[in-house]
Length: 351
Image (cartoon, rainbow, N blue to C red; front, side, top):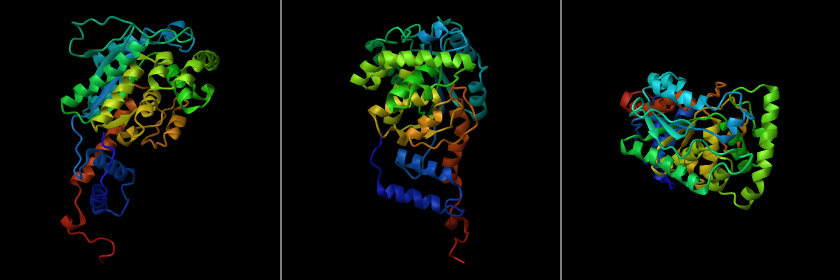
């Protein structure tokens, strides 16, 4: 990942942006994004090539208990099939915006038909869902490391195909609970304030969810406080898909890819990745503020300003897909918009 930016490059990008046929700063956040991407790619002529959304799917042992989620665990596998059949929201948005889509089985509690879904599903399955972290660790150390490495492999494979812009999404019944625990351990925000309704729990279910997560938080706090590294946090309360997301962030940043950050769960994985690479957010564009309780606090903790606030809380990478046209517009104006000189337009102060 490029971490030292040439002052000359920054000045050149700023000059190019400011000399487009517009008042200074008139394109607002688009100008900031154009500058960010130019610095990331090390050029005044940035390109977005083969943009892609990757959805990592995994099950959580706690979801089988029904303590934190109103939907049965089987919905994870059913939604993966929906992705592969082209019927989910992320499919519609990817088609609309001409985005590639890869679905990864990180650890779904289901055996997918290899013949029916040949070429459609990337299989990186670590296990058939994590263990119930109210009773013990969610994963072993080996499983955690394997999942992180698998996430890196998925991104490396896409980069090898020419992709340099990636949005990360997820699917996993119960994964807002893992994300809330991760958020609380890293930020220090009380677990109650990190816990939201997820897939739509009612007030009674929300109270039960909070009680359950308080119990899990207390159970794992001594071990995590003693060794607060991301691998250890994941091992205790994470999910296979969240671990792969963390690995994906690290590899994408290493490769100077533009990263579109989605919602609550994907941002929890970014919190983990940031513990290993504090400059990783230089590669990140925060697509939206999720309607899931806690996400706004996550973004505030990261000092991140999202592009959109539509009340979305679906996951799947849908927020990243919706933000893509804005990112594309930022690069397009830098590449295609005339300068004052080339258009023969007088600048302010010239008349």
